[in-house]
Length: 227
Ligand code: ZN
Image (tube, rainbow, N blue to C red; front, side, top):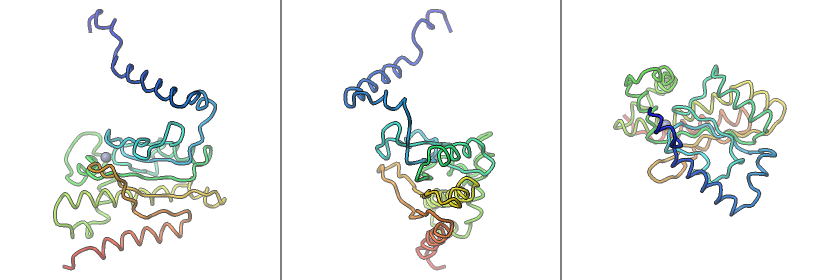
């Protein structure tokens, strides 16, 4: 890069956007940022996909300070992922969030790549976790008519399995054991209309969650054409 180019502020348009955004919020809610520096007290943890089309705060219309967020490719919760576990532990133990929401989305490139077993590089290893979900529900997916239907269903099944993983962490198990209210949820967001599909998993005990997971899977079996 030339010396002349370095005199221009990098990503000037984004810095400009940021100035206008901050000014608009200050004008609408004077003192907003000063209040946020004092503390954050979000009630929700969002575990979602890194996809740029699925911006957590915007989708549920929440302001900074209201949503704690962890995102990775295909919204996967792996029991040895210290990044995700640390976010979950901090959210539950320190911030005392009341709700943990795993949010997948239809048309997820990570889920589609996992289903197609398309080589993309290092990320293939991460997506093995989604392939495990597909393998676990192979019979259910085999009943579907085409790849579009299969990948949409796999997006839902992936959320169901990741909610199960959240529930099985020591963090949530310990919170439930000491009577701390933490409710787990599973949603799938639709890119084409901006709406969330609630998979009706909401539960604040292990028994309730197991029942809701079974009911969610049973609904798929009931909807499947008889072969
Ligand atoms: Zn995605």
